[in-house]
Image 1 (cartoon, rainbow, N blue to C red):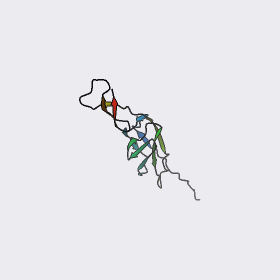
Image 2 (image 1 turned 180 degrees about the vertical axis):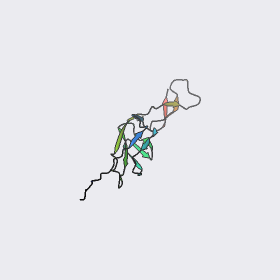
Image 3 (image 1 turned 180 degrees about the horizontal axis):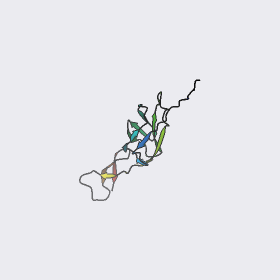
Image 4 (image 1 turned 90 degrees about the horizontal axis):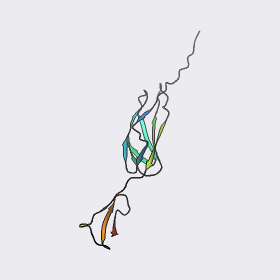
Length: 128
């Protein structure tokens, strides 16, 4: 008599850590990623308002959503892990305007040069 056994692949799970709920334009954050026992690497990608190099993600926009995406392939013993897709809300960066003329004028109708960290162009004239 011969008995047959149906083998099934073991499951594996991806766990991401350090993914913020939101991040501002220009900010970077680094995440942690662990996968299952297949021995295959967790592959990280991005979509939307960010880009990534490895575990470091950079916000490329101040609006929209950044998708932190993780996948892990299976092998002869383990099924591929279910894809993880965590969302990070993009927020606008705080900007500042600083007067860089020296000395700053103190009389009416005098022009000064100003620098704005988030404006285009970055340097412009202001009349006071």
